[in-house]
Image (cartoon, rainbow, N blue to C red; front, side):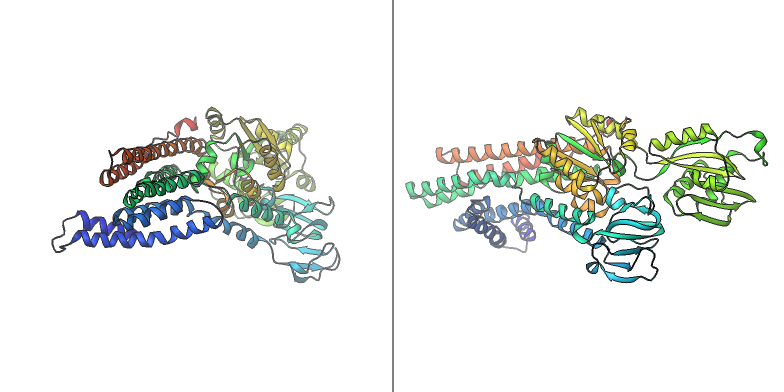
Length: 629
């Protein structure tokens, strides 16, 4: 259809020597585009009438038919083309959200290893549908936990990022009767789980259910232009009909429909949104539709996930302390601190544990030209750490339990410091060389750079409350929140708890935006009035969110809020321009100052004005430096 319109314009206005009757050919092209565009618009009008709604599609259909009847083929084609462009722009992103639930379902394990008792070794592979509450399931290293349950045998580190959103694996064991969740991964060890919940009843299953329910409710939101059309469309049709009856002037009645067709209104709203979306894309902000701008501009409360949103979401070395060592205890006085770090990194690079990766990353940044030494007799002690012989030195890296197993003593002052770090939510790792502790490391999540500046900017832009939610312990949450400009911070929350928290706030008629990055944030993203995803988060989270901050840049959050307000203002300006134009055309038509030709000129000029106004928005300068201070 666009090809027909463009061809018609080129034929009509460009001098083409070999084409004699350009006007006739252009009119045929306009006629074809008008008829082709009328079909989908008319079908939507009929559907709306069946639902007892007089939509703007009905007015556009009548206007196109009227223009065709009076021979204004160019107007018919252009009106249909402009209207369909607006429809495509607003609806193009909505189909993607449905694939998010399917992606979640695909993550669910489909089979499991069932054993007859906690001590049995012979396992039978069965489908998830065959598992019942009370069954014993064997989970091996690298496998996914298929059900919710309780560990009855063994221990291991579990990555529960899909449930809690926390990047650090948690040590769980039968001794502590720890609970496990479907969808989590056993990174090391072997466990037997007694099933408590299966399928849709698991925490993972409830995540999927909440997203489905919330997505269904979101699709029922009516666009502003449809609400306006409920009143505008019947009025124009009645005025046209009354004019035709009273004056017996069919051409005048059809002219009212043609001039009354809100061309500037139809194109003005989506073109503002396209300009805002385009400017957002240049700034690394992906907006999935017009409604998201309106929702973000009205937000009263901003709720943010901790891990991966306000923090980097990757375990990193946060604190380092050189241990106090009596000089007489050192059989190798020639060792220096950089040499100790090199030995430690040589061991840790042999491990895939997140804490080991954090150590290696820290050492490589500290010493970019480091060369590793191949360790011998490398041994992993599950839940404690690693040890080996490296460069003729005995190297032990791990927690206090591992040091105790190797008869290595930690001084009282180091113990006190380690306890403080652990209370602050850090994982404490000791590096010991030849029986003496040399370095103590605190590993944990770190706050994103510029996070606090972004929060302060949101306050200046009118966000009333800033709240942090996390699946991590309240102790860790308190430690992180003490360094950020927040009103509230809540920990120990499962995904449905976050969603319920947001529902509670919504009960007070406040507009809520939730910012998250993990699959576990799906329910909260879907339940909130607006879901904002960090771009380095999971694909599912990005699919179900309304706005995506590319590269997970937290400084883009206040920029997105400012852009939303500017876009909404621009949209209302275009609506005002369109309504004033329609009013002028109708008054001018009845007073005799405006006829079909002059009316068409004003009509097209109004479209040009709203496009220029939108282009003014697209060239707006968004200074990101103020958010990085």
